[in-house]
Amino acid sequence: TRKAINHFTEEWQTWSSWSPVSTKPPANTTNEEWSHNLTSLGQGFFQFELRVQDINFTGGIENPGADNFNWNSLGTVKFAVDTASPVVTITSPAQNGYYKTDFTLLGKAVDTNGLALWDHDGNTLTAQVPYVEVSTDGELTWTRVAVDENGDWNYLVTDLWDGSAEGAKNYKIRSTDYFENSTTETFIFTVDT
Image (cartoon, rainbow, N blue to C red; front, side):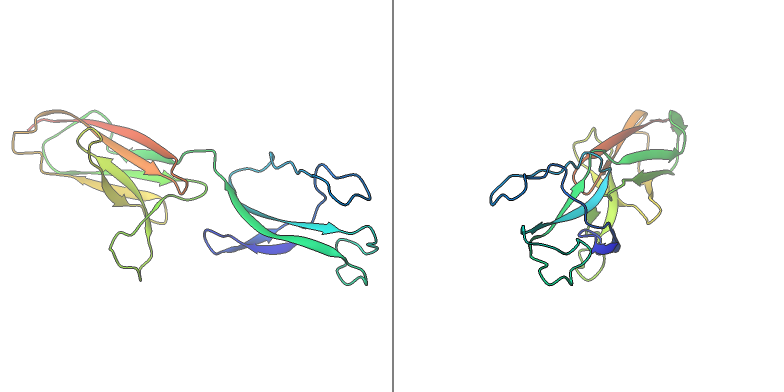
């Protein structure tokens, strides 16, 4: 077992032992194509490294100390598999309510490979944070809202109570992941002052 660093989070993770490629070239060839099936990989970050040995090799894959451990190596290639969009939910309050004063939308946003990050304070010395976006005008403009380490976000609904904004409202909440897949949910409520 080897250790590999996650290119995106800089965290060390377990890297499995060497294994032969799925489709091997014929023996004793000097120039040949090869392939390896990666369809079994799930969501996540991965890396691979390719080693090729010459025909005079007598050691073992796990025996780099052999006298004729003749390998040529293709350096580490890092990649990610991301086939799913993030999940964004509105946890409170319930849909289709009637409101006449400020209230807070609460929700969660999660993604296996991580949400897109935002430089929320314009300071390059502080960490970027994941976010969701809220649109109150039919997706013409979006306001970013920070998502905490537990995936929770909140948005204060305000400035609708002077009588000029009566009626049904549709707020959109959009979550985007590290690879720009996105999901949008709708919160429906009625202003009734």
